[in-house]
Length: 399
Image (tube, rainbow, N blue to C red):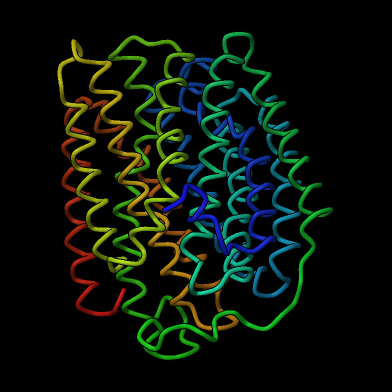
């Protein structure tokens, strides 16, 4: 298999959407360092940071719901443009806020408008791909995301050593630039529904049913939520762990965290291309959850092995991410009925949004009362529960 084989057959518009995503996420430095910004630059406690980040996650729930609703009503293009522009403005506002309650309010608003982008973007990718290349189309978007995040982590960590203000400007400017690129290079088109070719056994139990009344889809969403709850520790509690337990500075944390993006960038497309032809999605997702378990067990090693533990964690969590995420979002879009893609994909996004609420809240509280090792063992239990539920899902619907 040639190195470019996994990229063949993807539509021109999917490549352009990936370019927009690359521009946007290259400046996503606030998200990467939010916990450190709250505890470091603003000098709030880790418990207070947990509350603030949970409110930030709560905004994602509303954002996904509104994004899915307006995508079905207005089309994916208008929602994406609004989200990118409003996010840039909210980031500039966040830069001026220091009061804790105002900080929480602005974080809620920021993530509401930011996360409205996701269901619209998911529908855009699904609309511009086929059932035969949809998983790889989503993997290309994740490749662009991870390429951008790798850049944001390394450059952002360096910029913070100069001034926190720089990462706010970088984030806002890339939001405006990606909105301009979307408007100029990827105009919305209206064509026949690409969902007509869905396999029979991947349709909802009742055509046109609300996703909230579809038992199979809600089982999928809850299992996805648990997997996301485990994975999201990489965003919210891993950076403080590296700083407080390993004693690393922000630049070192950024460089080590960038291993995640680098591994995904190099291996996801060829791995997905090979796996999607030989294994059912549920088998792949469950394998990824077991890799999550292995990754968090690495963090229980003594601090004397900090570098080995951190690198092993980043490599394992990256492969777990590759096995879980592209296959789950691909199935979610295939399962959604025509004209309800926004509603169904918003529920998938809401599962991640709720994980973003509870991951920092529960994670920081466990750290505060019981310590980091207790958190890592709790995450192992949650990952295994998700593994069991996806096994149950296999018996309810063909994935």
